[in-house]
Amino acid sequence: MHDLVIRGARVVTGTDVAQMDIGILDGRIATLGEGLVGAEVVEAAGLIAMPGGIDSHVHISQPSGPGIEMADDFASASAAAACGGNTTILPFCLPEEGQSLRAAMAVYLAKAEGQCHVDFGVHLIVHRTDAQTLGQDLPALLEAGHTSFKVFMTYKGLALSDRQILDVMAVAERHGAMVMVHAENEDAIEFLRDRAESSGQIAPLYHANTRPVAVEREAVHRAITLAEIARVPLTIVHVSNGEALDEIRRARARGAQVFAETCPQYLTLTAADLDRSGFEGAKYVCSPPPRDEAEQRACWAGIERGDFELYSSDHCPFRFADPAGKDAPGARASFRNIPNGIPGIETRLPILFSEGVGKGRISLQRFAQITATNHARLYGLAARKGSIRVGADADIVLWDPNLCRPIRQADLHHGADYTPWEGFEVTGWPVATFLRGHAIMRDGELTGRAPAGRLQQRATPDTLL
Ligand code: URP
Ligand code: ZN
Ligand code: ZN
Image (tube, rainbow, N blue to C red; front, side, top):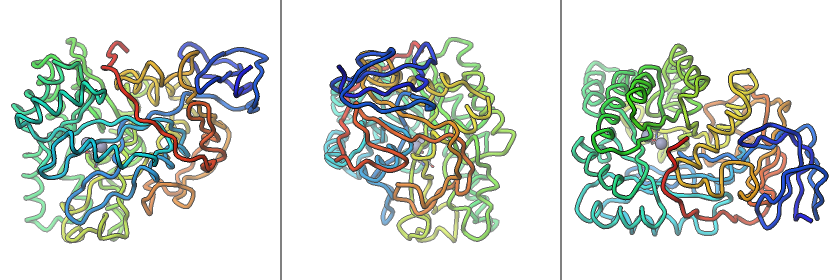
């Protein structure tokens, strides 16, 4: 007897796609088979059962500069995550000015307390290399189960020098952590930005023009080289183009342990979106910027070949009609002042399902790998998360592959006041999300269950994908 049986869905497991029942007991998958009996039964014939999505790259309540505020807190971001078919999220903890990494983590975890509708882990952002950060705080947090961190090669106040990156990587090497890198060359961007502004090029489009493919390609090459020198595995996040991906492919061919992530914006948007009339282009300002159709094709080719282990949202929401968001002071006078980032936590999975699975580019199993399984393995969650198998947490999403409707801001649950994908037609939507065996979303809406997401103690990365 199970607490819950999900009956008759096509179930996507690590080895198979087959019609079967899923028997759930005490929040875990207890049985995969036929004719299972449960206290509660969900009839799922005609639906697809997938592992709950893991979005391992989201920004929630992150300090964003004076007067600027992210549009989501844990409650709204995780509601949107659940409604978009996710059961685990990994946001970033960034210390405030003068705050230690450990103090920042304590404050950040308090923000999540009792607010999060899905399970979560927290990556660190390391933007200082003082003795306390590298000698005490970072080691303590890595040992406490926060086993991954991000470093930046761009953004004033966040970017580290090559030496600093090597020093941080040395800590990762000692503790078996995963280093994530935002690879864009800050000096080159600053040069291009100054030149653009001095010739009056101030509109949102120039955000894209001053962060060309070359600044990403160079930084990807350099980041991988540093990781090879420090002997650590590396994840290149938000890869936006074919040349950066070629650097990754070449590095792998010589034996480097490098993993790659891409995001919906690099598969479906272009720099032309930043050139929309008036200030509309600000809605699409993110870094790296969306490129052109040739680069979209290169990213799709990478997805199809299996070059990308990870597909994440890089959800980084700011309200559009808001001086604390995209319409920040000075934003209309120069693209430089527009907060970087776009919302996408709820639309990540439907976009890939529709454009990837629906259009025959990837299989259901590949979808599960790049949206859940690989995230669990690379970020130390694989003991419980990321696949439908006996013993795992019953984090399951039911998909209706035939449900057809456009993405509309009016239907979404995030705190932003727009979606970059307004009107984008999608076939295939998640219709039910189960977190550890409890329904948290049905038919696109939260079920009303109190937020029960738990902080996950994470293991060291499993890099043998
Ligand atoms: O523009 C973006 N992607 N903002 C979020 C922060 C980051 O770099 O990932
Ligand atoms: Zn980044
Ligand atoms: Zn990001």
